[in-house]
Length: 205
Image (cartoon, rainbow, N blue to C red; front, side, top):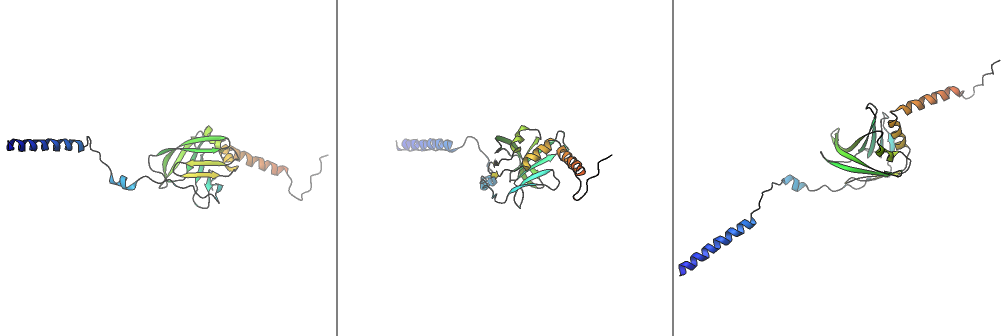
């Protein structure tokens, strides 16, 4: 009888041990990269200091930049060689390959949400949204009121009103022709206006 009880207890222990093992065993194994775990999610960047920030025109006249004395924070770049002309909105803030996001810009009675992609430029990743210059989304820049641009994880840019973005977008949409037309008009006006101190020509008889 004692042997039968001992054997029963042994069998019961084996059964309980097997049941406990099945409960602790996962159905499917998953591989996890230790680099990913140690890196963790990136913290959102604070909004940059805009105390001395303003719009400026690039040396070649094909782009305008918003920022301070350092690197630009936001740029509009016009490509007149493309047909039709194209304009790229660039947010200069770090990103990673393959990422996509919506970049909302508010101003001049308009809200535009630009679809930006992570783009490699001169060894650095940044956000870019290439568009045809005629795209209605760019109307947000065609005015003189303040602008507010928020990049998820990259802070908010609050830009004071300026004529530069509006004039640049319209110039790009016109294929750069406005600049040449204005130059010709100024030259014609200069010919019509006599230099200071010159005596007017006597009327013809």
